[in-house]
Image (cartoon, rainbow, N blue to C red; front, top):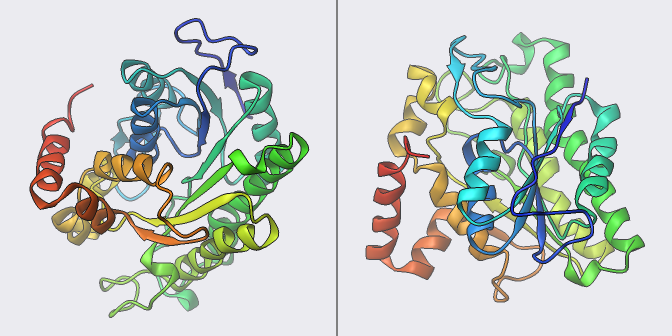
Length: 300
């Protein structure tokens, strides 16, 4: 059952919109949390969604261990970064609630200018071959990774069209190499599953097709590359290759905050976040940002 918890920072009220508002899905931890905090630092207020409302209630399905992170903790980090936050508890597998959760966001904050489709389904089965997996897993992955973001995007589009604000709207899709290329090895031996690849390939087409349908809306795919999220670091050998080569989520947050306001990116474009940030910052500053993110991983 979906739950709404209101966190009002710096006197935010429904009729007091002084900064652009970004909606980030899957913001309890990892890339979503990092994007929310970076957007707050760059002048945005946030409405954030996810399953984990309070600290200590999330579990890594790969290990059974508790995972750090929650909507409330992300909202507090947004406040420290200078933004205001409103939390909406929502689950990408509850398809009947996806558009309703967007409506709750609008009821809470009035308008949303930026949609970041970041949330995905995380559960067992991503390291098995299609013939060996369950039909239920296929349905859950398609629902969480493709159907839910399509429905969220639909709700956002209806909102900005109805309010006549398409020229102020931006959609960011957090995508993956899996949607564009085949791995060198199959799932379970260093590669990703067919189902995951198929869902990300479908998700990948949202941005460029939005621009076909609504040319004044800015829409982009952002590929974060390898990222050492809390789940990756807790998953041991199963994701060791990601942990070894990845960057902290804060690096991706920094890149997305820059992409949102970068007029040089072709509309409907595909951006690799890490090379993009390195090009814009230069090698020395990029390495400093990565080291700073590593140092701050266990901080507030």
